[in-house]
Image 1 (cartoon, rainbow, N blue to C red):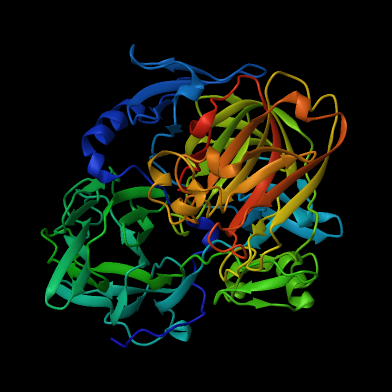
Image 2 (image 1 turned 120 degrees about the vertical axis):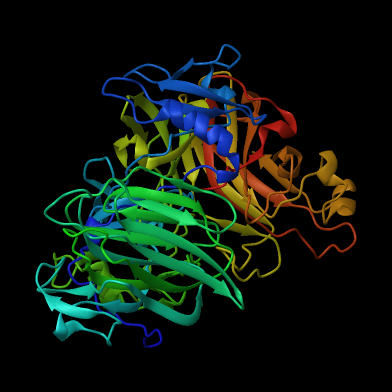
Length: 635
């Protein structure tokens, strides 16, 4: 078997539009709870509401039914007398794991908003007014180009080995013989002789994140017309003299496919029966989890062996019966490595760049136009032809467009990762919850409009608050005096930021008014963290604070509203209540001012702040440090 060699050759006969998306689940360590919930929340029959897993802030879980009729407010039907019935009593609601997975639509790319939200969008074209496309579950929209941080392809895969049985496309000799006859994607298929123990794919490299796929001719057992005999595929994970094996039982007398593992932990194996005809297997793993899929259905999920993958073997028995055919037919053997997700590069003023898979940004306008609009104009560019491109980074702007205000129950939806993408990458969106049925959820998003989303496209729902939101400035700003490579805005903009905010009578309606913003790399002044933080001595003496001023009057400092440090991995969303006497109808000046270090007057705290918005909740939120909580971790 030859060593691995990269190739850009597309997988013959397997269109990416046929591949299903991945599904994540809860940690397998919580096996008991998962088993109980799974028994309760298996896909229900038509017309029955789906049970969600409601997680209280304390960590207690309750099965609940989420309902939100058109024009009504979200409500919960608890299946436990001790469970709260208010939506905002729960830290999050988790959608039951789906029994099946589905392929992404062709043309989908991920749009990253300046606010940090991410959504799949079937891009149509880039026009002078914005990016046209159709979001998942929605109608055609045009998103202002300046409202986006990036338009990215799903995390790509690097083809390492590919074997097809068509002689003109064969990339090196596989350890099998090709034979004319029925095949998945061509005129020939590989044949595994009886009593075989062969390496299909092997490498001396360590592949800690990647996968293998192939097609095989399946047969139902106990059928007189055809039998495949017993045979299996083995994924070998090894390091030094230590090995662990995941064995997939693909043929034999059993009515269903099976998976076994000698690694620590257990596999969650689903019931996938045999069926006559060609079928597709894909096994994908990363540092935490392994997923095996057959066609559009999950076969097994579980903890990945602790060693890197090194080999895929096939073992074929002798048939076990006079009517059995002891040959195994395979096609399109493929090994790939998943390309790691890259942090978004900083936007550059007056330049739109092509974001490469290496992390670099290439500034060539003709390539940007071809990537988004197709070549020739109006045509679609297959994703595989742009494997070297991660996406497009729009040019930086001093002012970003903002959508009209929306009012209702605000929630955050975390996307269920789709098959073929990195499990931790999909992201989230925020919007107004309008309706929940047994199969779908309806959400209104400020830019994407009305979205009707299948429940199995959602990993979790986080209740936020009820009321009116008006976005003021989604841009990321860097306060401080030091350059920070790797930040969204590496160069500081100074020690203060100002916004001129026009407030109307509608903005001053209601008893609860407040300013919301997201911060990272900011230290708290209260609680246990104030005595442990990097700047606790300075902060205790009033130094290194970031203060909020409105109409030249000091209101508060942001540090006071944190209950723990806002870090790069866990930024914090703050809501600061404001009194009406500080505000006026018409122009108001909002300002963030920094105070220097007590020990060194030329030093200021460096932090990033973004997603400034005006929020008017129906019910007052608690004051003090409990108001600010770090954002839920994505995925």
